[in-house]
Length: 164
Image (tube, rainbow, N blue to C red; front, side):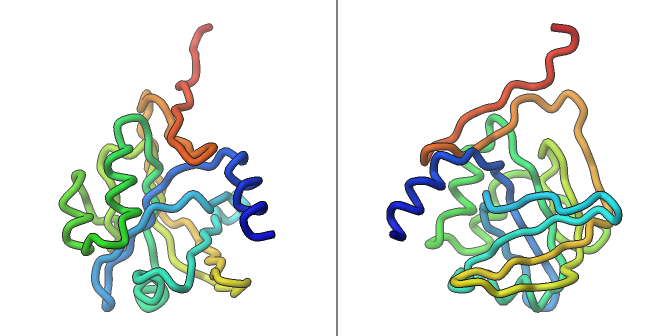
């Protein structure tokens, strides 16, 4: 059942984002496709993290996270943050980073960034669902193609066509 479920879910296109944190537990980050908006009043997103991930406890201890929405050209960066063999320092050596107002690292050339606090956590199976309140949003106009994960590989969504 697990293999069939994973195969079915691979047919569901997902955004590719870097989720990062810094604070008492130090800087950590990983590539995530399990993220979605919850509401715009107040701006809230949910992020799913596997509890076996080496960075999981750091996110909970730091209590805040940054979300960098990736685009075309960020494939290598997404793979670096997905590589469990790389240290946090190695991961953050890729890309150009700035700290958001809450302290989490945010990718400077991301399509958009969200600076969040973790307001609630729900454990389900192997994962924790983090409910995150968005405090600061940056959107890069004309940023280009969006990066998605579909059928176990990266794909690009074209930017909005104005006018078409």
